Image (cartoon, rainbow over all chains, first blue to last red; front, side, top):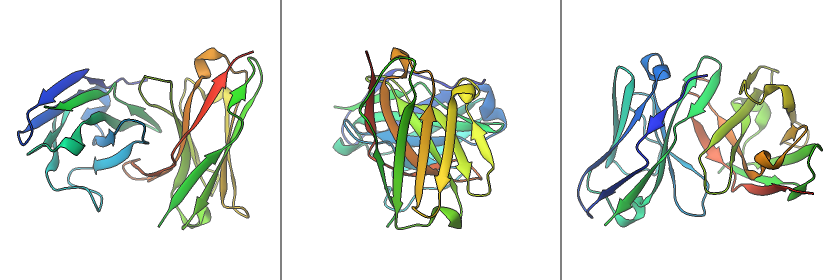
Length: 106
Length: 119
């Protein structure tokens, strides 16, 4: 099955911009989905498809993709964005998660 | 407002079957969407287990498929998971979630339940 690789950790000063990347072969065929998981909580969907943000998710979250790489950008990171972020995508009839990125807001 | 709540034993013995139930409120599971399970070993990443549509169409994680059964009880609006022949490696927080059939996004999640496999 396909694998999705993410950088283990990234930090960003409060109010600055951070990009979380995800690489994998399945991304050549399928759009990435992004989840945020705050400590002790269930994951939460923050972006999916080419341009879909669930209701209640701030518009500072955006996503893009090229080839086998997908990216989630947080423009003007806030303290509440301090969390683990996981990408995911379809892989045929299966679904695979990325390895996860810990985003620390300084 | 859709809500999902997992329940089941918090402890399972090696080689036995892990059984969990997810009760759904605010949405009828027979009205659409796939319903599935995801797990997360303590301190580690997410692993998708599989999902099921009310018509019977299933999507499975190939690495777990031989041990997993997911079922729907539409009369109780519940989703169930059975995982056979468990080992310590199956110790995890188990989440149920609603899954779209287009992007496969998981848009509603339960809070999760911890299952420890130990003798």
